[in-house]
Amino acid sequence: MNAPRVRHVGARRGPLPKLSALVAAQATGELVCAAEDLEVHVFLQRGRVAWATSSAAPLVFARELCARAGIEPEAFREVVEGCRHDRRPLGETLVAWKLASAEDVRACLAEQIRQALASLHGRTNVNALFLERGNRFAEYDTALTFSLEEVRTEPQPIDDPDLLGQLRASVPESRWVVVRHGGAARASWPSELPVDIAPELDAQLFEGDVELVALRAGEQALVGLSIRDRVAWLDVEPAYRLGGVLVALAPWLSPPPRCGAIARMSEYGEAPAVVKEILHESLRRSSDVAIAHLHGPGDVGFALHREDLDPTAHLELQRRRAPALQKFVQTGDGEMGLDQRSMLLACAELWHFAAEVPDGSGRVLWLSIERGCSQGLAWALLAASVRELARVDA
Image (tube, rainbow, N blue to C red; front, side, top):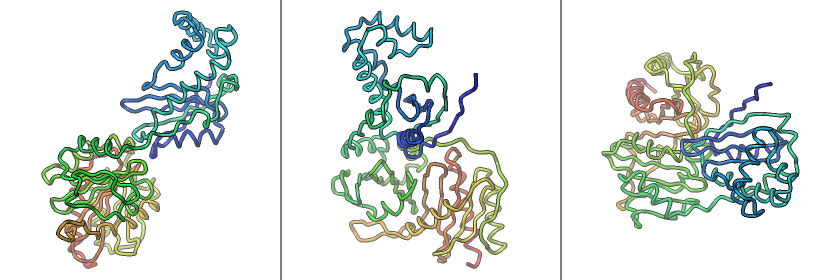
């Protein structure tokens, strides 16, 4: 028997958009979605949904069908065991044996699938892969399959006060928390914010696949989180380590991929030899660094990147986010500049760390590491490297 082909499916925006793409491609096989607290299997036949199971909603089909068709639970279990032993489709067997009507089976199948898919709503911390299959999968009775529209359920709207409470519980050291939509505050604690970050940064920073932003200036740390169509900001107590905040907010982020093997580095752009040597030294200190990128206002600058990594999209993302380091935090007493600014962006594949070179040149240094790798060394390398670059004439 041929082994199923495995196609890894990115989970940057959750598995449901990936399911839609597989349906559009008329795929046949099994989409497996797994997280620490959830496991979902969705079976497709030529782009139609044939079956789905979820650890969050087990035995829906059995419970619904026994109640609807008046089947004794013991008799139902015997049919299930017989189908497993003989590898016969359960729904078709129930109809053939006149234990249930085709309408009953179809209605209960649809409910089983709806509840399984509903358990994936709002989930980005889910690994997903697709197992391509054929033969027996393709022979299933199409009358007992569904278009995605028939079994799709709309996600429950975000309850802003509830989300605010979850964030406060996750990071109790926060001095204030605000949940915003379209730049407008929907819920906040305390109700009158002593500090708030400029609303235009929501769209500027979270465009694309950015999931989390951390802005640091001295003892201040502001952390922003993209949650569906909302952006939440937290002002964190100075004594609380930023790493602890990121761990607490991890359930809202995509699962980190495993760190890749060490690869040779390639150069992108031009820079003086002394600048190149500083960046090369940063990479020699840590094999986790995937990109080291130095640029000034309005230019691409110079980058070292892993040979197997196309840097173009990452460098564009970095250049477009760099002006956020120049923004100001609104306070009750006016504007407070972010002196000695640094920034962290969490994307689906990489952590991007940024800091201004403290020489007034407007240059920004970025160090990027894979999401599954340690952040502590990256912060230390960033600080050491910008100090070295400050000694170099821009």
